[in-house]
Image 1 (cartoon, rainbow, N blue to C red):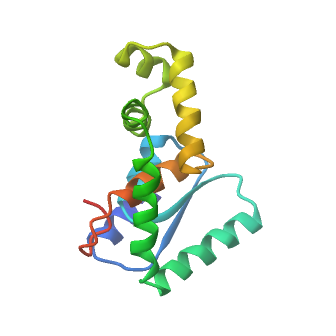
Image 2: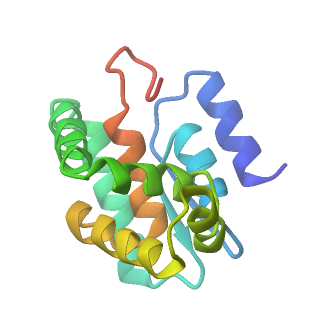
Length: 150
């Protein structure tokens, strides 16, 4: 069984422990699928000891303190709310796994403009990587109904 399949089964079974997915080869689509399946974080190899330990500590802290979740989700929604409509369009296409070249063609803008929008999105959201951006976007759509995401 692959890691993503395990995450999906755990999510469907209502398993509540936080999970961190570590992979050697990934893309944005895989990161989004992992987050939707309940992964707290998505880390690409090679992963450093301090990065892994920090991620696990953060996941356990958030799992212990249910009161911080709504605050985290509200902050994520606020970050995404600061994006312009065009940046939101670019974000949606990035999270769908489209490369910048295709996004440029779809939106009728230059590839350079797409790259500028992507850089602005990363800066405004504070995301350091595409998996972090995917996590932020999914957190912003959290419903608060027991299921992590709608």
